[in-house]
Length: 324
Image 1 (tube, rainbow, N blue to C red):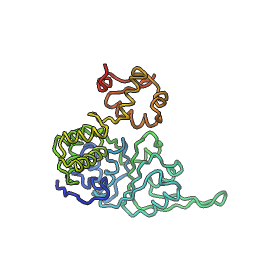
Image 2: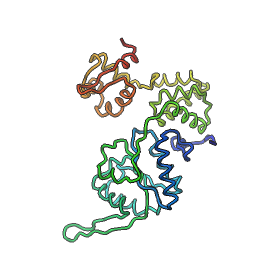
Image 3: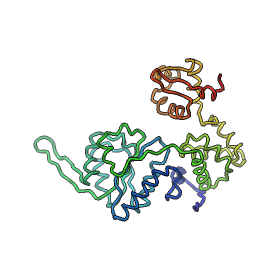
Image 4: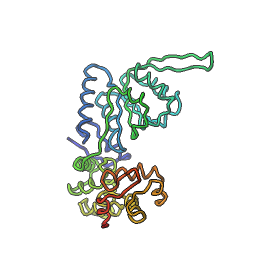
């Protein structure tokens, strides 16, 4: 794998995105299935079937869409569910596609239900049905669309309607959280692209606090680079630890807000159980923020349990806080 350092980068996140399959680290099962699907479609001379990716943010769903377009030698048109407000918006996007194009819709679960109804025939039969007029004089015009591939991504699969999920005939793929070894490889690759001298132990230290997510790992790498540049030092494990401690991250990657949640449960509620509404009031935080931002990682680490009676701090959670 040959990587050229990038010294003048305006959009760092875009520049760190892999452009060939060999540079995409992790998600081995998903990559293998997609490679077979792409090779078969290429041999038949047809675009791949429609694909749906889901999983937590920052795991590479958008990157996979770009890689599929690169492998097929096709153009990719990018939009998002909230950006498509009217049926006319979707019609404009679909009618401007060329044969073989990839249409990527991020946050597809936020599509309006009326727009979903228009999308069904476009995905199944390559036709777009538009209603002109109202009342008895209304008529339906059917427009034929060029063959295309819809690649959709969502962080909330349950919010997609069943009819829409069933129309992704190419497959629905869940992106899993990464292993620390995979995150360390991603950090080393990003360091080469950013022309950063990075020790292996320093990459491991960043990986341990990255919440198993490449996007967070790259963010922490850039902050450590800034710290080393200002401090006139190199990126060793010690300097990385100093930087991440200054950012408020502990050895598991918990932020001050994560630790405050655990400490509030222990100090005010004897470790629980306590309902999310009461916990949100005690923290002056929104319930959705607790459920969507803080809880998933705490539960994944085994520091917190979600029971029918409420949230409970586990024994591992007490040990991490240094409490008996």
